[in-house]
Length: 289
View 1 (cartoon, rainbow, N blue to C red):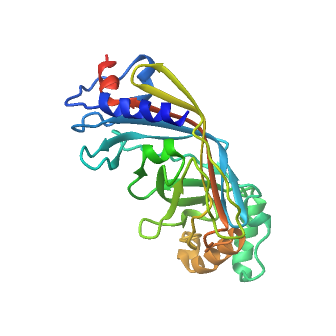
View 2: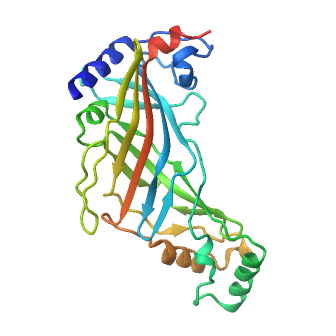
View 3: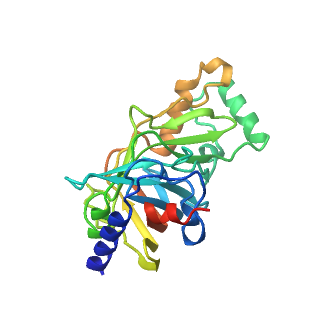
């Protein structure tokens, strides 16, 4: 199967040489590529991926993916070296900010014992009013890396995502993050088998089930991208709106204790299951109306 897929991807790259594009939107089988940056000269291919299941785990906290996350953009390939560069979506919405529910909510409902009394009172007041739910949103904070050769060959990083995890809750506020643009959570996803340090064990992704609905379009259904070798830094900025942020350090400490951050390689896992669509940029442009 791999050789067939490799030929398909090469064909897409050849077809994808695009010199110009209109402001119109693609139609038919290429309708999902409406935000592909086809106005970029010599863009080869368009990418549209939806993760509909799987999970993101940092040390002690596992967040299931229950709401679809969308990644979209395009790929430029160096004609001499074959190196590929990921180009962000035309509207800037490259990775959708899709909040996922954190099981157990806020600190498992109990205020940490090391909180000062005034902070415990504030915390319990939020709990009593029902503000216990917490969401986690993975946000892009850097340049995506991509390799269709690694994707098809099932070895190495097919997709590299520099991320931060945004934890949101009425108590935590809007500035509680694990990772940042200067210290991102870098997840190198593969369709192959990982080699993590202990206590994690190797896990294996999958190219998925290939379909070729028309010339210039490859759809990989039941695709699975995995990684369990990444590390995660401490949480920062949590509770910064409470009493002018004087307790931010304590709340950061509570979040770190609950989540298990900072968390070294071998303690974290990302499994992204869904559908990946790859289209020749020229075909996307020609479908526009």
